[in-house]
Image (cartoon, rainbow, N blue to C red; front, side, top):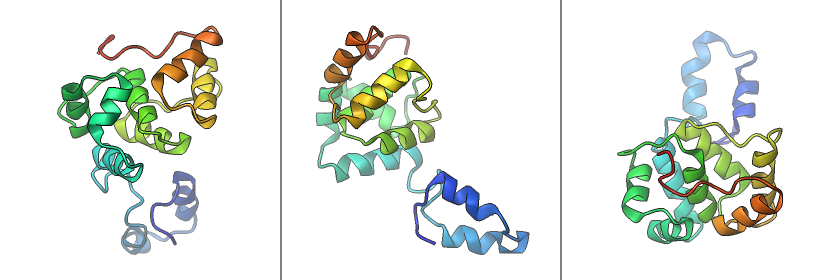
Length: 154
């Protein structure tokens, strides 16, 4: 089986696994688990690097203070404000799948397509809008609150 498989593929793999084979399956699927590769911090850094950005560029584009952004990505600080992370993740040009995985690894709810505001955010990202200002324009046009500015309710 390939490394870094989706959650659904992992769940499908569970069917028919004998308890004696758990260790070998975990070894075979190495790289696919949430607590590997540095968790949220390692995952986001690797995606930012893969997209050719420096973290400081992403923080500026997201309008997140550099110092605060570094603390979030290092795990030194934690936020319950999902919009702050969406700003950072979108500013890194993350795909919908990358953004959803990062939110999940961070412990925040993924964007939910049955929620109208979340649907608008997902549609904006799928449509190539990664700058938080562009996402805000889409949200405002559709009558939703823009992404909360960094620091709001942090």
